[in-house]
Structures are given as C-alpha cells and as structure tokens.
Length: 76
Image (cartoon, rainbow, N blue to C red; front, side):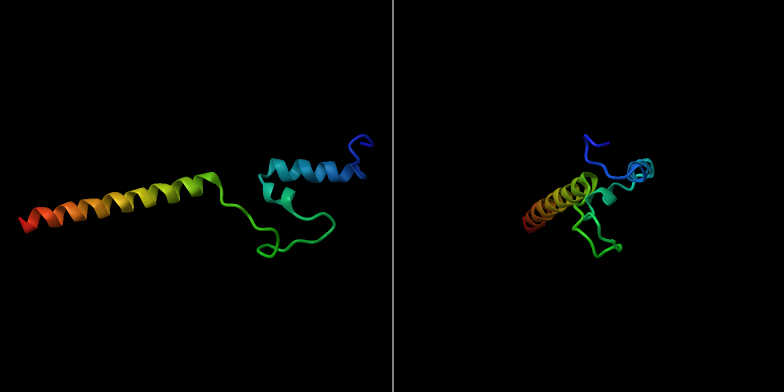
C-alpha cells in the first residue's frame, strides 16, 4: 500500500464495492470532497448513447431524402 500511496485499507474496500456495484462514476469524483448527484464533474455520455444518437440522425437523413424523392415523383 505504501508503494501505491494508498493511505487506508478501507479505501481499497470502497473501490472494490464501487466496481462490484457498477458505480464507475465515483472514480471520477474529486478527492476529499463530498459529491451530490448532479452537482459534480461532467459525466460523458456512454458510447451506446452516442451510437443511438448517430443512428437516429442517420434515420432522419434517410427519411428526408425519401420525402424529397416522393415529392419529385408526385409532381410528375
């Protein structure tokens, strides 16, 4: 523990429980300060959210192009 500059054994247990419970956002919290939900460091969206947004944007583009083609078809 001295090699890694970890001051307390209980901190290692806390990190273990955070990891086990999937509370990864806690690792980004500032050291030595209490953190309330929504008032701490900016949380980056997960990649699955970004992928979903990209997918929806592509669907919108395809629908716009289809509507454009549909208008051209009905004008003729």
